[in-house]
Image (tube, rainbow, N blue to C red; front, side, top):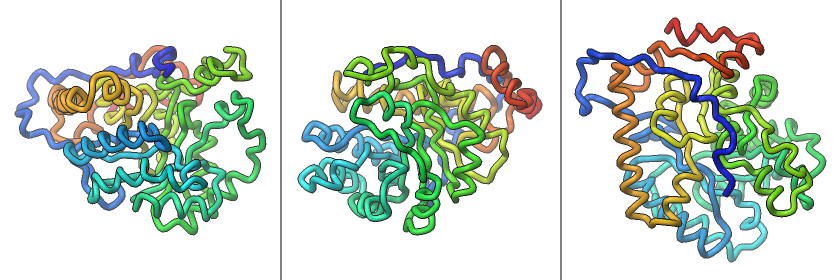
Length: 333
């Protein structure tokens, strides 16, 4: 898995230390309300895998951890399982292991209504991720080349879907313009999937991709994409994903205004290399560090965190300023 070659932009985001927070770590409440259910922590184990026997075990382990820690979870693309029913166990195991939790289905934004409904039904999903991955498709010799009609299709899916739909970028970041078009199509939740995490163009190039390493830097870094979308001040929920590797990155994204943060690659690597116990220990530490981050800013909960000032400098500030966004908005909180 190619990861970490690009900056997320969060190194340019600074939280303000509170030397007298007058809080105990036990006072920190990171619970959040999402898709009509309560999460203990604002963390989404994001779309990773499915469709193989190995993927079934991975998804089982992740679903158990999501249940035990009160996290949301999204499955990987279900497209293959829609056509090959013997692959479905690698997805249905998630709902079996976490019957009351928040589970997100996942199909392409170009999927038909029938495919979308089957994906939701397959795992009793609370929401449906529609993934957008144009650079990856163009890098693949066997990938799609025609992306016309997607907005009309998204609008139809929003109208007919029995569950909320989340527009999900897979690592190239949403711009303001793209979000506005999708908002007009009815989308009210975005997983921004910015540049800085798993680089699917680089992965395709290592396989047999067509981009000859010339587009490995393509995309909008996560902090910049998050800033762009937040500046629109639309009534939407944002999930910050794309290179959220540390708890500090997570606290920064939440402080900027994300409703949830998402992780995939780092969790998968620990699970595959070290096992479920090691991943459980890592998650316990990560969630403690999220709480510590709130305490150090003097925030009792997410609502208070998002009212705290922060400083954005460097390339992230330059990007946002060039796009007509006043970075002092966050400093004046």
